[in-house]
Image (cartoon, rainbow over all chains, first blue to last red; front, top):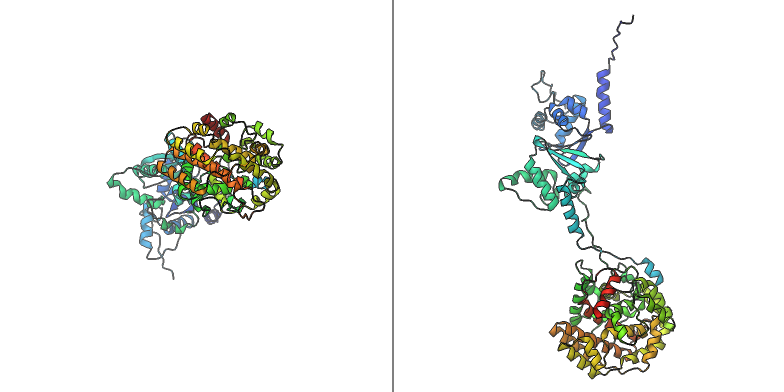
Length: 128
Length: 482
């Protein structure tokens, strides 16, 4: 019986992870990186950025710092917020007029799911 | 005085503070000392910097760094080239940078992004309220007495005899005084310059008149002395004293000894008070004068009080004696002395030759005696016993001043000093002007003041450097005089 393995699975794991990260971000708990653009800043978690963007991953790997500040050039704060929202929640609402610029920015930042020729394009739904 | 003194505040200003600060920061960054952040641009090029400097030069950095508590933080600038950051850092640390024309657009773009002051339109700051409101770094510690106006007595412009119109208002003087760059020397010069046209002297006199003034802050001196005391100090070198029969009191003396001597006279008491303040640093710097002038405009409440309390009572008796003292020489003597001085004779020599006391001395005595009831005053009065007739009239003074302006040289100043001394002597006699202030400090004070102011100017030239601590100043003066 010693070698018998049990498979434990929490079916809400992903959901929990998403909500938890989101919560942490909202509370700015354990944030360890500051993103700045257009004179405004927002805090995030390196782990999430690295997980969602090879761009940030390499950037953060190259600059090991306890709490780096990343000043993004030519990035709209609005888009940055949307991108972070997408990273943390996997979804975000963007106005149609902003969409091209948003996708362009996302491409620059190599946000997985938005930039890379995705295995599966994110679905763009129209709301309201 | 006592109460006011304690409350008096002094502004100590180092005129080179800003420069020094900037230079130090620049030096520190060169050796990367105390740097607390690393700027990383493309190609992993890193720059070390001080967050303070970044924040000081950019509201953007200020807001970003505000909530970054880390000991040492890295700031990543993906997309920024090293030359851009290098140029901006140099600009932020030194206020200038040389760049090639080709780089300007890119640098300006980054500068705009980072809101580097001077390179970026400040109007954009609107977003971050409060970020832009940094106060300029340095405020100068000038020695200006902070509270002069309040303190200063309502300077009664008691001097009817004075030629010069009562000081209009402090503005001119004060302005000069306040100007950050004014060092004592400059001030002196300025005051002398003003004298011709304005009434700095008068002002001083007036201001000084009130013993109360002591409250006024002196530049370096920590303790406000009575005005009397300080002025004299400058004017009279200790050396002079020695020459003359020592009038017991030099009010100013820094030297403790003198103080002791005067105690006897009634005035003395009063003087003591003032002295307390001085004693350590009796000397007043030029600034004091200025400050007085400054004060003069607004009559300090204290002043009156002081006068009443200490001075008023005493004054009446003493005044006469003092006046008398002055008169030992005649007007013609003074004129002759002035001429000699103009012709190159030293003031001291001239004074000896014609029996006119050197202004400095005169000042001392005067100050000691009547004007300021320092301990000395009592004795002084006695010595001189007979009041001399006033040698000079205002017109005479004016002439002297005019002469001074023409020559513009030291001699002129000497002459002025002499004239002032003479004038001072006269002043006492003049019927007491209607002085709003109670017993009004005896006219002599006014005189003294004038003398003092004049003297000081004179002195000022020689001891240019003396700005600093009163003690030093005293030393300088004494040496010079000797």
